[in-house]
Length: 79
Image (cartoon, rainbow, N blue to C red; front, top):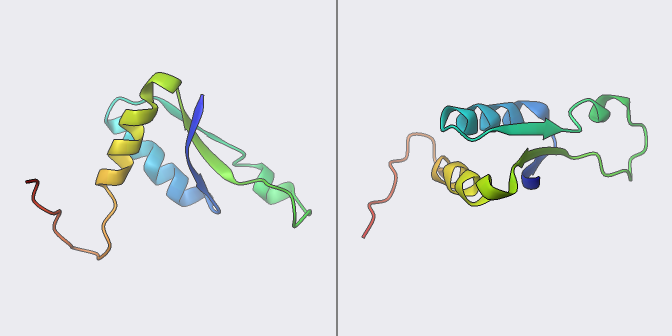
């Protein structure tokens, strides 16, 4: 398993998981409950979106294609 992305909150991870699963990429969210029980401010309990090793590149491409700098911005045309 490879970590595609880390999150400080659960909701963005859930959104990205739904995007990947809609494209047929199976994934899982790790550490989603540790955030609520940890009292150690220095502990690394980032929420992690993970995929199978063979799906890593495709997952990165899918998530990169959904990122825009401005709401309502149109994607740039490919050259």
